[in-house]
Length: 334
Image (cartoon, rainbow, N blue to C red; front, top):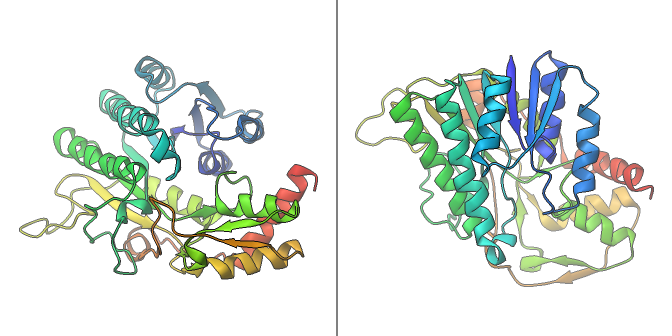
């Protein structure tokens, strides 16, 4: 197939592009290579893709409607995976306009391009952050998500609502994936695993928020990518039984929302212990209160994704963290 991947120089987008190319798909990567974190890492990911004969790349931003339209027109994709977004919960407290520009206006441009070009299936990144102030665990796609605690989460909830509107009005098949704390080689430098590793190796203290009482559904990158590919291949149809008490995760339109996580929450302090073991060093820990916009715990109920596409994450944190550390040491020459 011809598949357009936005955010193709990002953590998930680059790995997904590799997987699609490996099975014979043609991929157009679309990314603005912005400076939210070091663009050199994005460029390094991209350079692994560029030699492939079935990969093409366009530099552009989601909010640039002309660039988006030109990319669709030139490549004529059959399916689209939208992974580009302004990421990060805490950054949204200081730079809210960046989130509306990319995650709302930009996503509208993606939807409009998909509508105009009669795309077979749009898969897009949502986030576990949409669960916000929910305290019932594990998080289920049938749960109410009307209480976000960050603007980032609010924009991801908006994406789900916007996608449903286009599925309902124009018959555009859409699937939203609520990602749960993705980690692994080539990961984002603003994520905890990257920050902790850098500081521990430098002999600096690590900041542990909520006094380490967090738990997270840490999900290894390869498990995530397998789930995305499986989801991309399953075009949703109208959901059955969408009547008086509809599920937020389906519709009588061709629309679905799934959790994609490991279904194995891990306490943050245990995660740090595994990292210390892999690095062969102990961390100096600086315990701090909860940060605004954070949630205490995440835990993905992935049963719906398992039933519908056979999703089955299999990488324990001991294996995933070890692979990340090996990559980090090689990439940074540590």
